Figure 1 (cartoon, rainbow, N blue to C red):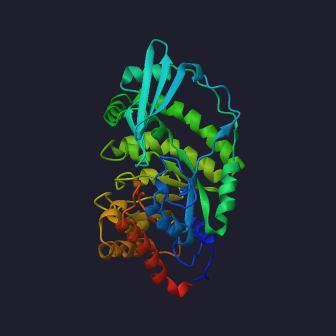
Figure 2: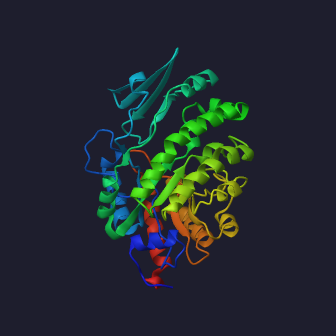
Length: 384
């Protein structure tokens, strides 16, 4: 076993299947960089004092992975700009947003809200409500994506992290972009009963996504990427055959673009995986997360590891366990994840399935984060 290494080196070697001193431990989207406890914005939950110990622990002890999205500069004129209006307003403790798109003879409206004490956005009205809305949306003009990636924020993040971690680039896949346009019930019905029409929507989304990725991987080669959205086609939402049709082909192209410049492609898919794992593997992805343990998911980490030994696995601590279990109840979960995941020389990152999103971080949850670090330090002390 190699000697102690920096956190950045540990992560980079793990995702490429090289020997490490111990498995990395990442706190999912809690990274201590993009969460700013000094930001006084009323909607910044991380300014609450209860978050300060966890953010400090993250900076000092975790193998930090910072999520980043890359904006495009100088893209062609948006053909929908003159058809679109966006209204954002504050009402009490909530920020409300409404977007309206005018098609030829139809008005599409989307509404969302965000409470100042909860770091998530609820869509209260989806843009597309039925097949006629979808047809109207597909009739809207498109423009080529031909701008330049703004990589300065990513480079600044990497400089700030130093040897404590890495930046991970994020992209939705076509299914994520398409499915999110509908209420969940309407999405599943249209995806199952109007496959040709839904494929037209996926193709439109792909034409927006692929050029951005192609330009970004050329500007930022060799990075870790996360591709999110496949879970929209997992059971019980859609049958495995439609996962193949709506995910595998489209995501294979994203994986190819990432790997073409030396990058690492990680598929993100919550929930049930047992009957779609082979479709995920068919994309050629290098990594998978979060592999939720039963009953949240339907396959064990050990089973995935045995079936796909060359894939880097991220998981599989369930965030609901971290929020509800006592420390003595949670500790066996950490050991079980390590026992199942750390069975080879590398290719495993211990990670929760999600993160808390309320303003006040409970002491029980903080204690379980601390337990993760304590276990890692104690279990791999001989490697230091």
